[in-house]
Image (tube, rainbow, N blue to C red):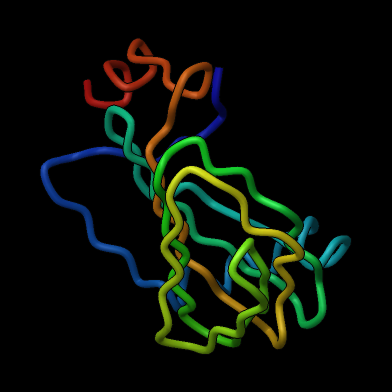
Length: 133
């Protein structure tokens, strides 16, 4: 069972990303690895995750079983896929459907909003029902 004590779903939710990022960057995980994340919202298959990543920290390779997006809120990142190598800066949005983005790496102190749709084993309707009650 999750130890999250804040709501993850509701009819509407507001997030102060600057405050959320300050909290993430103060976490032990961020100090240790240069990465920290927090699920802001989830409803059914939908997930919205805020990620804080330190400069030069590799985010890795991501296999997307469903469409997802990465919105660069602060900083930047580089990645490559079958089409080539790309660089994104604050305000840019990466969308990719089923497939793979490789060698994703922060190019500065970076904040990302990851939006995805859970599939297969990641989707547990009973958890969504508990979160909505």
